Length: 157
Image 1 (cartoon, rainbow, N blue to C red):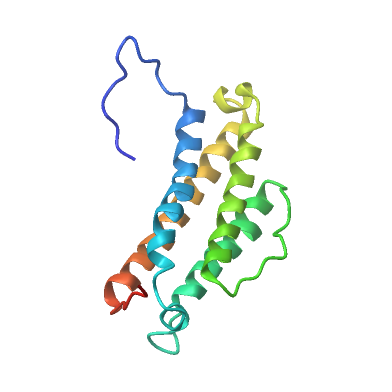
Image 2: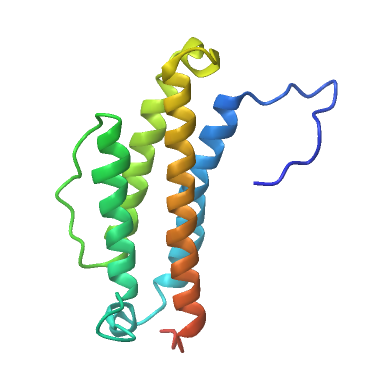
């Protein structure tokens, strides 16, 4: 996330809480931007593995959904993953987004005191946890982008 410089006097500084929630929300926007493009890729290319040892694109997104629910949502004591089909890329993307919304809603429910008190252990946990999530997002998205770049994609009309 880039910064446009310090806020102007008429524009309040964004809180640490807002910045973290914005960063975590980025994945929702990224997946929604990818969706129309990904839905044009034939299913055979979504499920194909470049090598036996490498996951397919579908498997990469399924792993992202698994981590969102079993690590990120679970760490916050949130809901368990819904019984969703992981056979279509669209349903997997829906699952990832639902998990991320669960994480964001949980973090939005934390009091301002816990977000802003640097002596509070919750604030340290929130910062570390959020950093780990954004690092995980970046790793997944980079691997997917590399796979797409290396693939010879043929689009459905």
